[in-house]
Length: 151
Length: 163
Image 1 (spheres, each protein chain N blue to C red):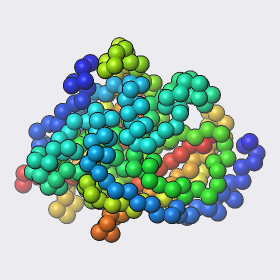
Image 2 (spheres, each protein chain N blue to C red):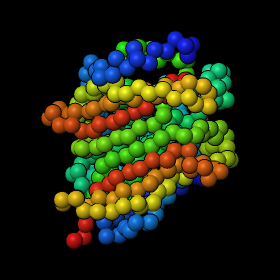
Image 3 (cartoon, rainbow over the protein chains, first blue to last red):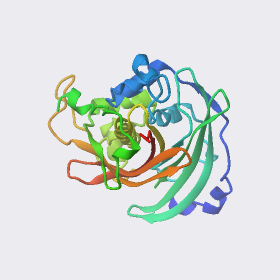
């Protein structure tokens, strides 16, 4: 398998963008997310409490975008990861605006970088993609760089 | 550990002036269970069988179903949002999935078997003012039952100031 990898060929795809997809943020989605991780913070669910907080109303917990990304994002990868196994390697997220129920977010993924490294289990590919979320007011809400490990 | 203690709680409002370099982020205990992984799959839309199918997980070389990296990230988000309170803003956040974690199995419909408890922790590494923003940077991580940091990262938050 490993010998079929043509890194130069794959690198040509860097910069490729996914078709934009949209996702509507709903209160029920936020509640389900908070319950799944056992996070009872009233900022996510209690309108009265959230009204007095920084954002003046219910907002989504920061982790929600990871979930939304899984649901809403088209793959910006114009190739199949060449090796059989894929692991999520982590990433970084930057938030610019709060995410509120009723927001309609446009999600765009972009192939950002590909690196190769020899690991414990042989050759590994680090595939980095950039995701941006923009709301209905055309404000950039968040940006993420996520790394998939293909080995 | 009963559910109510596993959920952690939101502290009273934290201010920029309350923290110094070296201050501890209030630790948060979490228990990953097979049930939590199923709920996370549903809530996040990540239906990779690596996280619920014993045979598939074995074929992928991880032994048995592992905790989603993104779930551990969500825990770290909770660590920070509990700490910074309703007036704080989580600005920037990163983490790396360095080690596998394995969930506890369920003993009853609601209670897990005895076993591993994970701790989300953090320390303040930097504080500064940028324009009108009071910014605090932290090292954060998830620690497994053996005290190993399986998910290290960083967070940058904006806190209110008493000034």
